Amino acid sequence: MKKRWVGSGWKMNLLSPEVEAFCRDLRAGLPRISMAVEMFVVPAYPYLQMVAEQLKGTRVHVAAQNMHWEERGAYTGEVSPAMLRDVGVSLVELGHHERRTLFHESDEDINRKVHAALQHGLRPVICVGEAENVGAAQAAGIVMEQMRGALAGVSSRALREILFAYEPGWAIGTSGAPAPRDYVAGMHTALRRGIATLYGEEVAAAVPVLYGGSVGEDNAAAYLDESAVSGLFVGRAARTADGFLRLAEQADAKTFEVNERSGPFASR
Ligand code: PGA
Image (cartoon, rainbow, N blue to C red; front, side, top):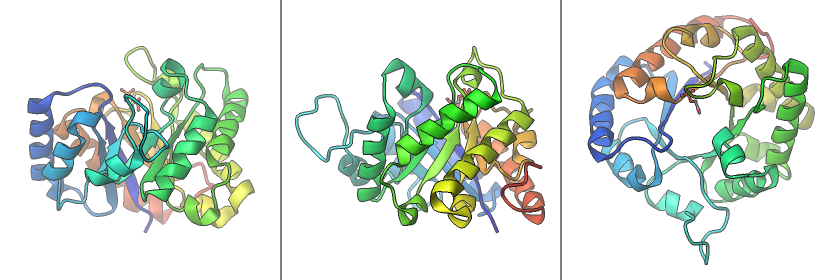
């Protein structure tokens, strides 16, 4: 059975009392979600260790929001993959729209980070997506380039450790509007086809591709109905454990239905 993924990205939000409450409530609510749903949280750096400790022994993966590609050295302000591993992190978000636009991360930077993450046993969650709403054809070209850039030199064996999140910049945050379901399905299918061209269909079919950008309780089910969408990567609507759990419940409910339907390249 194909699993579904639901991630909660905290960005630069939540202080200790909220972090503690999130972890406590999440632990309490986990029995509501079946093992068919893979869950991860993405706290800011100062809380990674605390979250990893508080969620220890649960099935929730702890992810970092970024990292440097070097293992150590004179890189003031940066955090290395070895440090992330050391504090209990297992996934790392790379190339989020805000990293690309506000902090000028290039595909080359992201590619270095992908290699470093893999070398250190961290699973990269590679974020791709067009910044502006330029239409599906142009957007697919942008996403292909980001995907190829991020995966340069990555073997098909290593690809099995990688997740993608398709997050169009124009759909993210308070000024964003959720991307239409058909549009998302088309972009996910295009991304998988691009991966299939490089690595073959079997590998491409197995790569989880999540959607992110103004996902909420009202639209989650529609995205999850698409077999090309492996899950959701959520900011605001998953910033409390309760919101996160409710979205995970939706993913859980849809998992079986979608698994019954045709293969990964079908858009419906
Ligand atoms: P949002 O953020 O759900 O608050 O739109 C999504 C993201 O940036 O991953």
